[in-house]
Length: 392
Image (tube, rainbow, N blue to C red; front, side, top):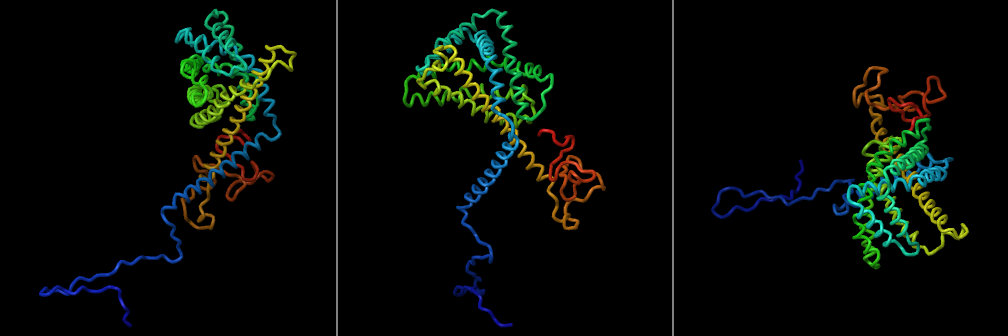
């Protein structure tokens, strides 16, 4: 064997010492051929790029599902129908909520809070007399008035359930109205507490709005977070109790938070709407009451349009999430497709594993529609306990 030079060397032993000295080798840097090593400091860029690509892919799937679900359907008409129920119910709901807040925390909180809220709004359209009058009517209303106000206030629940079922694509039955009204009662019960929170912060937020400059910015930020809590709670009750309740609890809570934040921002946009110095009564012959009612109805229509569209987005996001989870659950074993024995052992012939999804029309599944014994179209995911075509 030919000798090869070695980078290692032996140290010379010290004078008078026995032994041959220590054997030393220089440090060697190993290089893996064919592998490109990236600096560690740029690793987070790869992670962020991958996460951003995944987020874009999921967002594209959600938007595609929203477009597919709303194609040929009139979302604007549904929002208009819900606005009709809202116009009927908005004043009775406010009477019940303000009276409940007055019973819990005192009438002064209700009247003074309403006055401060009106004073903090733009002066182009003075809302202080209307808000103060509504608050006084609520705290001075008789019990007969409050009892009769429950029926028109509950009509809002019927409109919400009809609108949400239309977005879901679920058929309306004869009990839809009554189920929606009864399902809206928890919102009415919680309304006094939800209404009392912004009224309690009105003495703090109102002066910030009037001072202008950065104080107004601080007031907007503070009022946004104060209003976010009751709006999110109300939306969660609507999605979980009043509506069809097809979303799981965690998905409903997440959808309520996101949708509540959007609706809270829309509510603050109404402040800008009030700041526009135009006369709402001009198209209606100079009748101020008619102009104010129409302006309020237009704002409610926009609010309901955002609500229904946000609910459809939440449904599509849940559908995409479930579809991705199911795709991972039913992903075939490459060894099994190749005819090998890799992966989990096969069960008895003709028996499905518990909890497994069945993707019909693909390799190993049932035949698609149009063939003997066929089921759903090619590639449609069918879960045990659900009929083909059922809403997710």
